Image 1 (cartoon, rainbow, N blue to C red):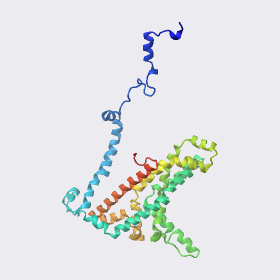
Image 2: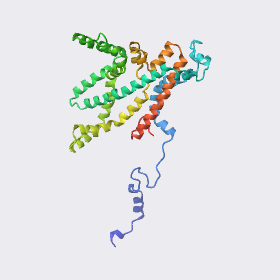
Image 3: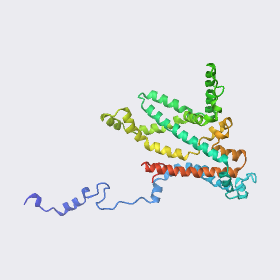
Image 4: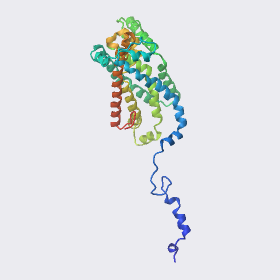
Length: 345
């Protein structure tokens, strides 16, 4: 009788049945065993309790300074008078209720719609002129071979981010003001001087230029971090296939940056109605409210200067609702493009 026909003993059969070969390849459990469900909430809490405790202080700060003040939006439906009591909660409680009267005033106010128009124009200008610049600068810096030159360039571009808006506007005043460097050069050569800082027609481009000079370096950091995660093997494979520098940038670098660009665009769209309160307020009187009034300065002027707190709160609430709608719409567009956006589907 050949070896292949000899019956196996009982012990050998049991050993074979218990061997790893009869188990599932991925989980190590017997084949056919259903996968385990998600861990319970109690189990996840015990597992991540240290991380949860670490985030607790930040969570408390967010609740106190971001969510609790939302309750103050009730003054948008009141004729709020903060001088009724020294306690703000008591003042809200005793202020007369006016319903939707403040919102009706807003939609009938031409100054409000002028502020909306200026805000949207500034947003689109900054989206078209400001947003692509950090991407281009990040690609340029990433192409520099010497690490020392790359570090110096990044530091020089990043430095203006730490300047206050007062300092930034002062620098532009010394360069582009009526007595600035540009005007002096024009007068020295027989031309009339320019005062770009007080020109309502060029104010929106001036504000965009100031934002680019101050904050472009901040955006570079995000894109450089995304570029650092790109595998060098992709560039080598593209080069072996005959792709030049521009082809590698178009087919390797930009697709790697696309998720980050989509996320930042969604966040930027959500921040569309906030175009720089301090920057605009410092230059509002120089060019007039017709060119410089945006929604944030409109709320500040009516709420703080004119003491019409209910009307200003209603304008701020309208701005917040529109911003939420813009975020949801932009995130939906990101999903249609195949990107994650702010949150998954």
